[in-house]
Image 1 (tube, rainbow, N blue to C red):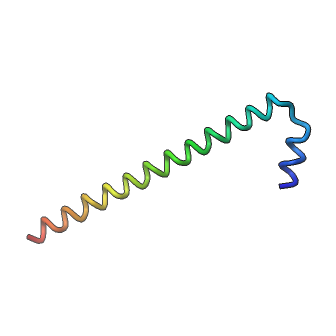
Image 2: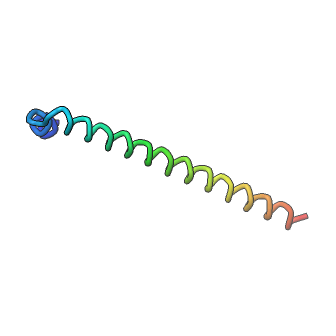
Image 3: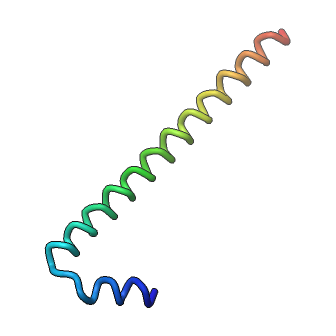
Length: 57
């Protein structure tokens, strides 16, 4: 935390704006990747369970 404060203390407003934009992009990327991962896992489980139940009939 102290390192972040020391690093941003000497930064100009344009540099801080650029860092903020990068943080927003990183957050957006993490949320999208997590959503795709959850959706893909759920879909694969639905297909797997559906195939297993139809094969047992």
